[in-house]
Length: 432
Image 1 (cartoon, rainbow, N blue to C red):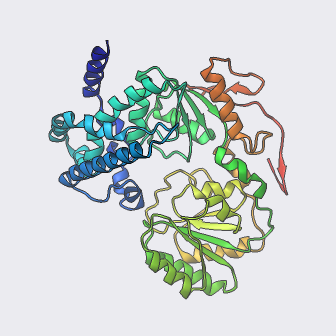
Image 2: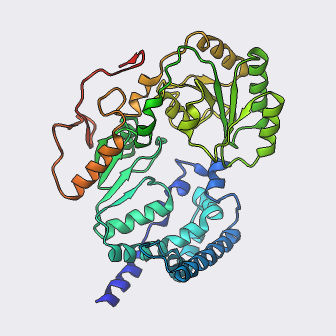
Image 3: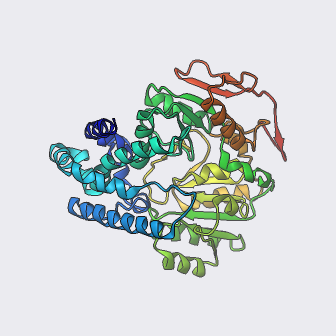
């Protein structure tokens, strides 16, 4: 019986759609490979070339093997780490299949092999290993926070094929051009994410708008200042240093006494350059590697940042978000400008004019985030984590949706629910 099961696993693995499983990088509509910066660096994709990627596959296999023997030697109890070493070993048999896909690929898909040949290859062994691991562990549910990255998509596919209930728990704002969601259930932050999923196509998911769990612990720190007295400037390594310096110089020239805090992205390797800029313009430097973004937001009344989910996080604690197009790409990745959450600036003088205005009267922005966070202004604000836990426990046990809490959203084309709440909530002088 076991032999029959294993043979079936290998046959099913050979039929995997590796391009769909690697959607985040294989999809031309998402076009992630055009963002040649920290996105690729964070995912280890800067070293291009099919031969290089094959070498990286073997390097990661070696590291997983070393890690496996160290865990065996340490005799760790009550711990069941995922056996990546098995995933790499089982993938060996599928190298000819990956090569065939490579030879047949054209255009954008052909280009992706130079970045993720190793991920395509690993998909096969990862799927087989995940199936066996899930069967052994017998989890009651599989919860994922990302459904475009290849590892997560492969694990999701394996969980589905083992008939394990699957949940998508949103962890950041969704961009446009996302693929249709295939999870059994989706716990989304707000209406914006629901709209994007509806636009992506049909989905079997039952969807619940629960707000933003990571915000719960920070609601007591909502900014209630009447004027902007300090500003944070956040950058990533897509942002040209020259453009950043031009902005810093102009702000410092016009607002000599205004406290400024510069916070480069933790994947940005230009550490000394940012330190030099901060020193020359008398700006405090914040280390994004050692502190949470919400902790940073407690120290400022406004932030200036490019395409980043930090714009939304700022608005949710009533810190004024200013979208500055450092790279002059006009991407608006999450649609924050398009939907009126943030104003758009591309020139230093535009920013300075805005700072002059908000230094006199800080505008309320908290309510504008309602589109992105369903609990804003409701009695459920600060309880998203509890909502998520209760839903997962209830849905896994087969219970019915609590109609005293959840109501069906009409005319969306999906089975989606929002919180039953019609009260107006006031925080400081802000209200909905």
